[in-house]
Structures are given as structure tokens and as C-alpha cells.
Image (cartoon, rainbow, N blue to C red; front, side, top):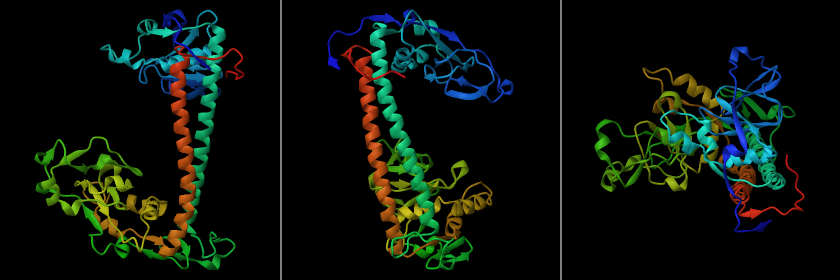
Length: 413
């Protein structure tokens, strides 16, 4: 590919395509087999007949305004969408990439009526070129898209393997020879307990059995007058609320802050790396995340329960996995509706029972798990680079800033 300062000429989008309305097809009228039925967010069902000969492009008209989908087969676009009819010999696949490049959300925000007006869309300026060059551009972008899809599939497979491995580690563990125990070949190595079959060397414990000696094991955030709206400031010590504790991670958006002086008064509610935080009320009850290094010293509010353990007895990463296992989640779901409000409290967290090996076996399990996690992180980094490359290529190729040589050997989808 070569660089050039001669951009493709600007033309209105309506000069290269028509946007046609999809047709209603209620859910109860669909046969649930056959051709894909498209809404603004993609495939929403199947039907025995189709409206448009494929392949083709579907554009969100309401809801996900301007979102573009590609169908390799004939399809039925419903009435919240448009489907694309190319004009002249314009490449349909190039048009697909072009529509993914155009920011239609600006059009949705510019009118008081939510949705994409096709006449407004027709007026959008785009850079257009001849069909032979369109095919080459589409081929390059299809190639990078295929690489991204392959990387995503590899990551999904590795995550599936990690999930299966994690289940095995939490139920079978690793013996002193570094092998997973086998309950089928060696049933004598296992025993039945209140939480199911576990290796003989393991114990059934609760949080208080592995509690930290210098911190309260289970702590609910400050109540009532301890922390109110008047305590919040523009900058200071971050405060975690229920929305910040997501499933497996801390969400840093919409943080509140308190002053250094107020934080000192609430010092016992500060979190440390390796703490486990629980959302304790409503539909999010039981949702939990480990505290990373970047959250060290943050405060929690009334809607969060903090669990701190002795790291010489328990690896926090494994504890997090245990608390998201079917065994513990079943106990949480059983207990959370027993109070006057749906939720879970410190007493119920303390009553949860789980199986845990000795710390040396925990560390063996963690070594195996970390090796696979490192592979996933490596693949995710590669995926991020591919996505960045794709964004740059779209900007360069669809404007003509960079041209694809005529002898380019890639083939468009």
C-alpha cells in the first residue's frame, strides 16, 4: 500500500446507494427456521421466507441507529431497519465498510425524533472511488477482519479452557506430583461432605476460618450519619458504590469522592489489594470482584460488603473463584431472600461453606492457572493491536489517504 495526499473525491452517500425500508415480521409470525431475520442489533430470529436476496447489508433505523450488519445469505430486515441497494457498479462489500466508518449517531442526536432519517443519511459526505479500487479496499479490510475474528475465537477457546480448568482445580485440585486428582480412577482419594465430594486432604471452611488477624474479616460499609451526601467533594479519596463492583472487575466510572479528613474518619472502611467486595442488595446481590492494586485505599459505602482473608491461609484469586462457583452461588441465592429486603448480610457471608486445600496446594493451582491467564493476556494484547490496525486502515483506505496497489493479492469476502 502506498501513501498519497490525493484523497478520494467527496460525494453524498445517496449517490452510491439507496436505503430501503424493512418490513414488519412479528415474533409470533416467524417460523424460527430458515433465513435470518434482522433487527437493528443483528439477527433476532429465523423465518421460512426472505425479503431481500443475499448477500446484503442491514442498517439500523431505530434503536442502534446506523449500526450496519452483513448477511451472507438472503434475509428479512424488519421495519426498524433499512437494507442497502447499491447504485451502479459500486461494491457492496466496500459500502458495508464505508457504512461502518460513517458516524450516523450525529444524525440521530441532531433531530428531536430518535432514529435515522434516510434523507439525512443521503446528504452525508463520503469519499468515493471507482469499483475496481473499492474491491481492493474491501479485500484488505476483510482480511484484517478475518484475523480479528480468528483472534477472538482463540481467546474464547482459551477462556473456555480456563473455565474448565478452574472447575477442575476447585473440585479435584493438584496432588504433590502436579497432577489433577481423578475421582473416577481413584475414588478412594475423595470423600463426601456438606458441599459435595472433595479430596481427602481438603477441609470445609468458612470465611472466619481464614480471616485476617489484623482486620475485621467481614465488614459492611458505613451506615447512616457516618457518610452522607454532604460528605462528597469534587476531588479526594474515591468511594466505591454498588455500581462500581461489577462481576469480576471494578468499574471506575461515576466515582464519588470524600475529603482526606473524612477518609481518615472512615479509615476502617478502606480496601486493600486482594480484598473481595460484594454487592449486597437487590438484583446485583452476590456480584463480586477482587480489589486490584490500583484500588488500594479506596473506601466502600453501605451497599458493599468487604471480605479480608489471611494470605498465609488462602489465595484471594482462588477465593474469588470459589465464591463464584455453583456451590457458593447456590448458597447465596438461597440466603439472599430471607430478610425483609432481598439481599445478603455479613452473617450470611460468614455462614457460607466451601472446600479449600492447604496453602501449598492452592499455590500449585494458582501457578497452573496463571500460566493459562498469561496466554490469554498475550492473545488479548494481539487482538487490541489488530483492532487498532483495523481502525487506522479504515480511516486511511476509505478516504484515499493510502491506496491499495493494483497487484494486491488479497480477495474480498
